[in-house]
Length: 296
Ligand SMILES: Cc1ncc(COP(=O)(O)O)c(C=O)c1O
Image (cartoon, rainbow, N blue to C red; front, side, top):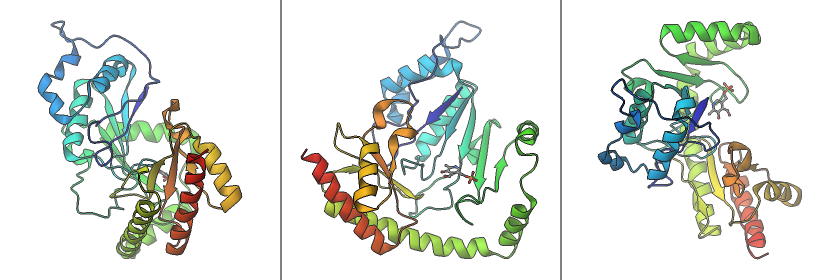
């Protein structure tokens, strides 16, 4: 059982760690002296702004979990980034409940503001964090060459588990990755990508603010995505379908990213791929449809 953690430092200030509700239920673990591990969260832990509801969820589900999966920088699809304090807290939780942390750092290189984001791996004192990276967001989507940084026993187990799945990552992709990195293309690309993506992010956010005054959306400091909430009661899947058919613009309905129905009215917007002209035009069209459905 893996718990999915949605960090929300830049979006929902009062709520720091979300555990999906669709997890199993067992009684909390106890120490030899009979005290519950749940007690590792004394009252002052609320300085982290973790709500009581979240603690209740941990209490309910933690025993059936073996790992926490998290995308701490530029979360896909939320576009949010985890604060340092919350990283510390997440590691405290993992330590208290003896959970593995899977840190997906796919967007760690795509950061547009000077915000401190030490990797969980760099903060890990217990060898319980497995950090993954990928070149898919750098060389090109779907390139599918990545890496894992973890203690040796994990790497050995993962290699064994991977072999029956695909035997070996294609050599040709690995050679391309090797040459790409060796020739310094990564650094060159990175400088350019950050500059261009930052401009596009700023443009999408300012156009959303202008055209969709009052709408709720995330303001990413990293990554490629903005999550937008449609008015309560609207269906993101319906919206995406109509948007594509009427305006020929594609957005991803957020629902498939959730394990419950709470994301039905969300859509994920991407700002890295479209041109600046397409961003302006796309958001204007989005605002039009958004207003139409709001008045229905
Ligand atoms: C958080 C995250 N991790 C990993 C990936 C995919 O990486 P790869 O192409 O190396 O499988 C994506 C791509 O969408 C992603 O958003």
